[in-house]
Length: 467
Image 1 (cartoon, rainbow, N blue to C red):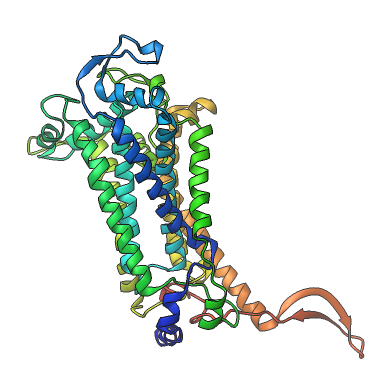
Image 2 (cartoon, rainbow, N blue to C red; image 1 turned 180 degrees about the vertical axis):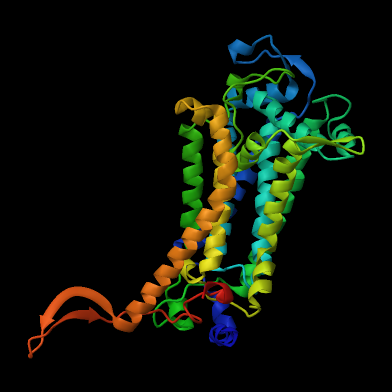
């Protein structure tokens, strides 16, 4: 199989593969992420002019009457000024927030597309790693951005960060003092997160996107193989949306920022230690972390005189750390299990790589169940269920659900592959019955055009496990 793959990859001249552009709609997620990042930089630069990351308390005396005279931090006051007193400020804030959500969503969809089609294989392993790091940096940028206004949601996020840092054995308390200062939340955390949010994280993401563009010029776009395909026909039918997609992305973000309210901090109020807000949930991309914390049992042990709080350490650090480590190292894992070290410029259909597709379905199920568990209280309330019943359901489902998803997905993929091979051998059934001259009846079949795949249709990528 490896030799056949090499011949197929070698059949595409390098000068043609470099010129191939995105010729399938799922290839555009990377471009959307790039354009959303551009909107983030532009709107963020505008907001930076008016935002003041200062924790000094002042008496609010702005346009929002219900908060007049209330002591607030300068960071919260400047955010209210942007929202009510700066021309176009609220629109810029909302576009910036929506662009952050769309950017992370586009990165996630790009990773899903690359995983299920095998686009992470050589020579595109570094490209996969770029997108994984972009996802981590994007999530960090989203969290630090929501903390900057110093509202009630900001304080809730800071409280979670404090709990996570303190759960680290031995050094947790010292790290908390270093991060927050002597008191929580202190006066230093928002200025520190400000420079992280507006300088370090954007610079890192910009560098990764530039490196990804360089990798794309070097290796070209991967592609799907169709019937009677060749490098010349692929080059002739390629499509590059370019400016149209850029203006469409900007237009959608501007429309969302105009008509869809998001993060109305004047309704939440300034953060006060000890105060809580009902119904508050994190950004969608952090929902899995909240869900993991909610369903984790309250386990705490003493190890050599040091408390070990597994109720926070496991769901908030170990589970996400293991998840992103496996995600980043998956290309190496697949190469190790399959022995496939050839170059691949042609993508797999998900059904043709049954085990890989099943692993991806299991991972998505695991993530989705943790994400849904973040709403365990809302589910219990609206469906009139016991909160403990819902919590225990998710505790069982996060283990049983991925196994069930893996089994069903793998069987479906193998079944589709077998049916396709059978149709290729015997033809597609048409339902038309004809009578032969000797009185017999037979069904008319049509030949099936099968794509010239880069190898056997069963088990591409995991041949030894899917046969």
